Length: 225
Image (cartoon, rainbow, N blue to C red; front, side):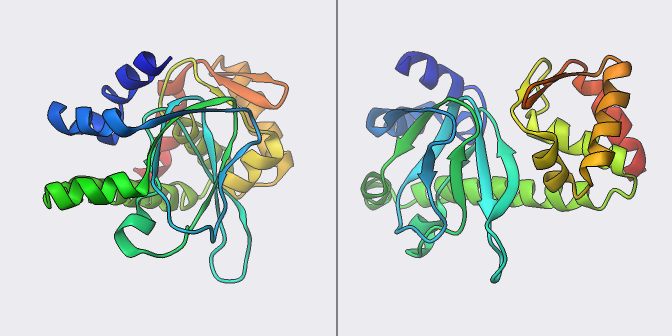
């Protein structure tokens, strides 16, 4: 399982964009973790810790801006890394993470990150790239929520939640999908029936299988033109 996790994370996401020598340093000290669906990774406000990469499954990312929340903001999929904020700032966790499905994670502890930077100060730029990747993601979330038509907005959220991967099963209820897409459950139900009739998705109990991710993406992107 560890070998498969390393192979996956060396091909997808932040670590795949780093030199092989840096990848090896990360993997040498990463801890493999298996979580069952519903298990917390960490909570908003927890003390500083290390970073986590998803090798299998998906994580629910919760936020609580101001005094509101926490509430579901994003479903993260394979290749996603998070948790670098406390390393960069020394401050508590700003988001919460929970296993949305059974998960396989790689965890690089905080003290290892600090030692890597002590040995090679340039490593801090590599870790900071996680922040830039997640900023890009946050901008995409904002862009998705600015789509006017609810059905296209829902399609955009499904594409993002599936990591743009064909055949991906998004473990989310229609109520949760409504929260992610800022749409009522009635509108979500209508959109899912529309997408299913077109052959783009296949609804399941508590989940939605993405059958035609490009068709969903094209449908959502028309609103941005």
